[in-house]
Image 1 (cartoon, rainbow, N blue to C red):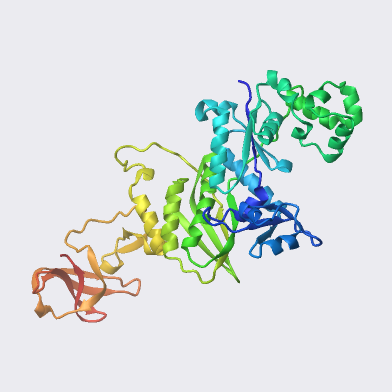
Image 2 (cartoon, rainbow, N blue to C red):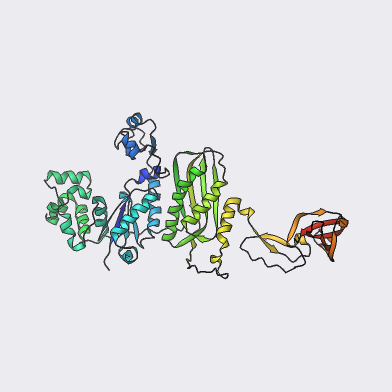
Length: 473
């Protein structure tokens, strides 16, 4: 099977990292500065800033005079590299071979083996451009028979032909198509060359002697005369992404859009490595501190809509102490994910098919993990000590005692037995001498004047008297 390579050039990566927290309907002017201490200049700007005259190359002082409300961010190469690595991991859901061309902000995917599943490379290129845009990244994609041709295709905006026709495709292209360094470009122009075909006809030794071997090797990689091996990116089994907000968020609902984008990116990474998560940690950095909350799942998942639903539940009960300027999403433990097909009816032997899981997760997101729990029976005759809290999914085996009520009062209530009619009893319980909570009681089933059936006992020690402890109906 012949190779097909897809190149995805992230055309505004540094600027996208600064503006991807901004919802599309908001149109704040944003620009990227080179960060130099002396004479800083604009490297890139969004459409709102360009409409105000803020163009790349403009001095920062001039840009601020044109747009007083301009938001300026300094370029952070380390953040760009981390974003490329995250997106490389995200791309593994479409290819089993992904590499990074850091110097060009480009991702390379071998898609020949995926065409039967994902369709032809041109349609896949359009799909990736659209999906990256939903994550907040602007891109352009190109495809070709080798990585070098795919990169050139992305730059030109036209697909490269098959390998046997690529030389004819290259000849009419201008020299600027190769994006040569200024020295090489100037030297070729001074020698009168304007198109690639003109230098491809030159003797190879003369071309190498005049311009070095780098250009010759690049042409050989384009035409397939020289192999172009790529170092594949090895994806880590963890995820962390940070997003700076263009404006402070004082309300939780303003956090939903940026965190949603982070979750989309995370779920793509999880699909790429065929893993799931059971928890994700979200850090909200505020003025003088930070606030952390966790999304917890009953079973490993990578379902974006599921995580967003839990996020909405969690944000509804979150109260911000201070406005938020930065959001970090972290998932440390990727778990093997078994995407078993769902049947028509839930399988009680399969925990993943438990229909209560989504309900439990939503309740925990809304009420807190400590407020949602199961009950487990304990072998103890004392009713108040015959159960304990456990995980909602834990086995809750307990002996069957139909003569006892399921509902116990939080604290026994003193009563006057003459106000009730005795239906059954007594049942003697005398226990607990070994743990300091010993008791001696006689239990009776009684009914009050309103017709309710209750569980009452007479206490002999430690505090004699009559008490109500449970309710049958």
